[in-house]
Image (cartoon, rainbow, N blue to C red; front, side, top):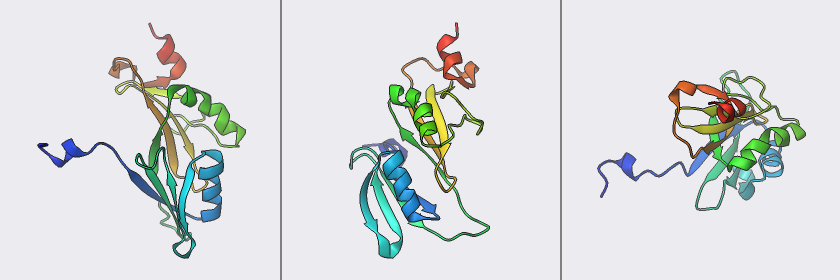
Length: 156
């Protein structure tokens, strides 16, 4: 038995995002990110994707209107190290700007030293902040802060 509910939580299974154009977003998540479309409900303006195996995670997209209080969200995809290192070129090939931790253009992933995690950010067609993340098998280095993969790899 666990002491708290938090002890029993093993991760996030699903997340949902509002989108302005469901067809465009389906194409982005299916054709560019390669997620498997699990189910679409046109009458509700909704689509659901498997993020990894069906028992690992799901992404829901919901068609919404435009408005001054339009919400954007953020979530991260867990991804392998080599795939993450190749991601900047893959994103650029699709006309998507790879971004660093502060939203600056990036030609390589960054490392968040306290975790430590390899990370790369980008935007979907609705401006949601997406991230590829890979936890590194290395000791945490909070003093590193957030820096490029090259700086992490080449540090003394």
